[in-house]
Amino acid sequence: MSSNGSTVLVNGIESSSISVNDRGLSYGDGLFETLRVRNNKIPLWDYHRARLISGCRRLGIHLDLQALNTEIQQLLDSVGTTGRPVSADQLIKIVITRGPGKRGYSSVGANTPTRILFHSEYTVPAQTNFYSGVAVRICSTRLATNPQLAGIKHLNRLEQVLARSEWSDNLYAEGLMCDFDGNVVDGTMSNFLLVRDGQLFAADMKDAGVEGVMRSFLFDHAERLKLARQIKAVTLTELFDADELLICNSVFGVWPVRLLVDDSPDHQRRQEWSNGYPIATSLQSMVRTELFPQ
Image (cartoon, rainbow, N blue to C red; front, side, top):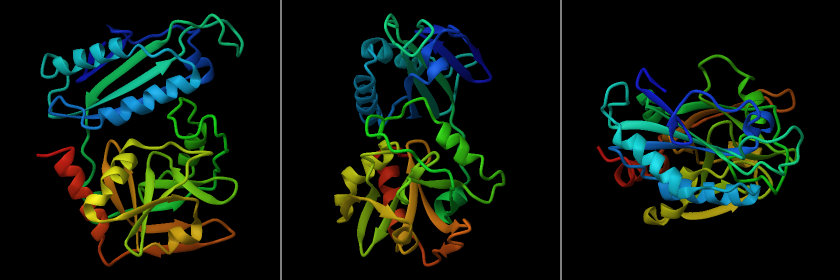
């Protein structure tokens, strides 16, 4: 199906429907990735593919990587044709489900995975988000710990849906979520990185959260900026005491945080960063140069 510059493929065929018995619909039994495209290339594809392969292996879903590659190329080749995206920047969302199955949680007999690809234009965020920073809040919704699912981008995002419903205005660009031990894990749509004494810290995700591909890219390349890196459990106190705080994902890249607010009854804290964002700015420059050059 194609309309208004967007296309949907289901198992390689333009369509807007899947089986009502699809386990992705019934149980969230699947995974997804959102790819940013620049000039018909997917700069972070190696990271997305690795996470998708890992997630399918952990869930026991067969991934037909050859078919997926063909379908992605089919979308890229269609850019500029009637009804398709036309700009240099686009998005492709990949959804892989276990496919149709019988009623019940058992996956026996569900042997035909479903591949759904959404292709659309990329909407450029407000430039102030990049240069002036964004406001972020601490969510009251907690992340459950589950090492079997931690790190992968499975379809069950109800915790994020509940967290995102905690605010409806445009004051906050993102909300950060803690686990039940009080450690900050990630955002509803992003990961965070904090800077302290010239060192870059990221949250430990062995028990919860989604290990973002942009976070992985930044950590892999931070040595170019002579930044030491460490993955650890991050407390709220450490977050508020950071020299810099930033959020990142594969779609918007890197946004510095100018304001962090925790308005829970137990804390009532806020922190503003008003002396510039030197590390975030350097990471933004690296992302532009390496991934999305003009």
